[in-house]
Length: 89
Image (cartoon, rainbow, N blue to C red; front, side, top):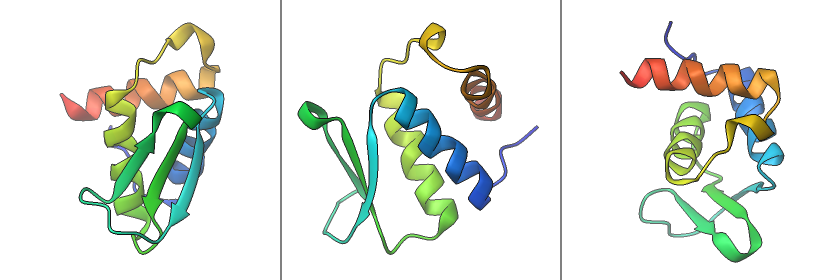
């Protein structure tokens, strides 16, 4: 099943980042890829001008670069990551 690009999916991703101790912020700026990652402060900054689909794609790009320990996540977040990984295959 493919991931749906809805506000609900975006909210779930934001919650997942919260579980990983990252803050997601939507700001204006000239990001080359539409986002920047401030590692020292664990902040993911996404362009505020992006629509829901672009925001989800940016968060998924960031997620792919992070070392995620699945055991530290809630069941809901684990399911979201599983769904995302299956969609990528």
